[in-house]
Amino acid sequence: MVEIRAADIDRFLSRPDPSVRLVLICGNDSGLVSERAAAFAARVAGPGADPLSQVRLDSSDLSADPQRLADEAYEIPLFGGTRCISVHASGNWSLAPVEAMLAAPPTDAYVVISAGDLRKTAPLRKLFTAAKNAAAIVCYADDARALDRIIDQEAETAGLRIGNDARAALKELIGGDRLASRSEIAKLCLYATGNGEITVDDVRAVVGDASAFAVDEAVDAAALGDADGFSRLFRRLIAAGTGDFAVAGAALRHFDMLHRARAAVDGGTPADRALGPQIFFRRKPLVTRQLSIWTVPRIERALAILNRAVIDSRLKSAISAEVVGQAMLSLAAVAASTRRRAA
View 1 (tube, one colour):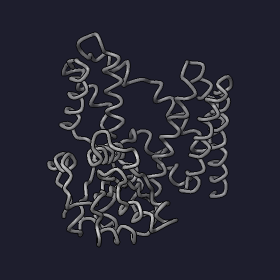
View 2 (cartoon, one colour):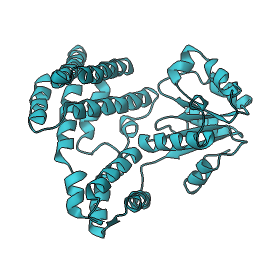
View 3 (cartoon, one colour):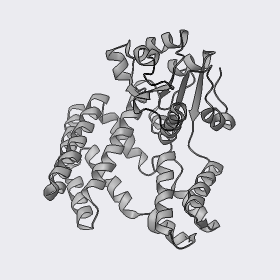
View 4 (spheres, one colour):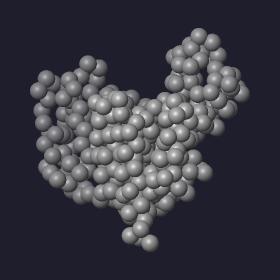
């Protein structure tokens, strides 16, 4: 089966084809990749499905145990129904388990592999486009028409109208990432609830929040090894009322994005393509520099530090800002040390 055309993607995902048991969903819009993979998995399992019918793996699981994919996919569901095995692909890993699955597809399960931006010549993408019993879906950043659909869906659900000026202003601020866009629109609708209509002022107040840019600036300072810059920005954010959890959450999302982008770069994708369009253009040079500092193992170490900090900040709420700040300074120290060794 060839790559699914853009016009046919929603239909394909909403009506799983029993003859196509393996699906690759990839692209430079990580949010759209995640949304489509999750929607397909939920559709396959059906409403009220046993939680055990959905299994999540990543490429490191398959590298450690190549037989794991087959064990999960060929397992007969204990309570009937259809299982869905979701695999997040990143870095360099053996495609042998997937090749074996294509040669003998499961009958009681679907396998959905999600990945970042893959060139047409990428081995994983070529494998799926060449197979008769598999499908490949490529996700690109939403265009104006797709954004209008999302805006209309969320506004209609909230019982709101949106004027042309407000719509135009909103579309300038979203669109790089599907999940982020939907989240921002939902937040905007919540803010405007009771007013009947979303206005330009609502958009500026919610989506154009200057504090979000300040948080990004602080995260970038830490990721680039600028401990003093981060400390100054972090103190300013806390003093202005921004929660330390917002900084920790932004840092987690940022390093998760760096993880996917760095894995793509290691696989041969140019940095600008690996980052995709979701990075604000003025921020992109800073994030590109970060890709040269942070290797995949260092990023995984950073994610472990941040996850620990989030847990500790909840357990020690009285000093949560200190916990988060210290974790971010630890990341700044790693980045600074890496830059010194490279100089």
